[in-house]
Picture (spheres, helix red, strand yellow):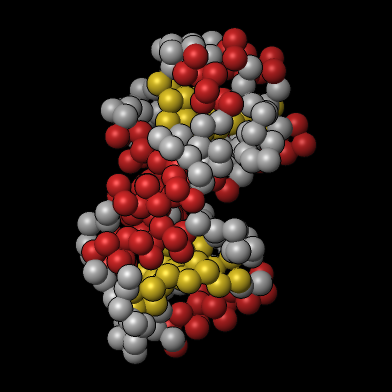
Length: 290
């Protein structure tokens, strides 16, 4: 049990709309308590038109840090003093650090994704990576993979295939490498996956309550692949379950969630994050035994 909150307690928060569902307060508050740090983490609903006020409030209230979730990851950027180079390329931030009124934005989604892969000894350089989706999460994962030297194919659903084209163009300009894109349909997925080294699901397909769905038919998966699913609820999605059945190496979205949280925690506190405690807290919150 933590000591009483006082005037010395460091304040950290999540801003977004909605935020009521977030598991981040549980994860971070347990981490602070584990290390005996006098911090508290809150979830604060901030409406779209109030993002500038929220950034100003961070300064005036002396909040040490913020996590930023939808729909503010892009709109908050003009109100920060500094943007980390990778976050600048991605065009979105999910973590802000307040150093005596100077606000710096980072994207720890990219960091967390790469750390989750590194823990499974996955080296992206030279790999053919097929990414499904081109939304907010996909932006971070796409740039992270390109930065590590992967060759990208980005597929998105027909109604928003222009998102895939736009993301591919941005990544190609930043890294001077060809990036393919196309429509996310059965035939295109089949063609793209025939020689893929890693498959990344950055869509919401398979997320609870639609846990029975998968973006990739089982027959397109094989043992030489790495399969990563950004969905973390459920922890074991149908995509990952069927990939395991095909003997592929699998990585779940909870690992990225924990490592992105750990990266933010370390930026705020300067202390190594208690990753195992954070992971166990999330697994318990999701009612999953790993």
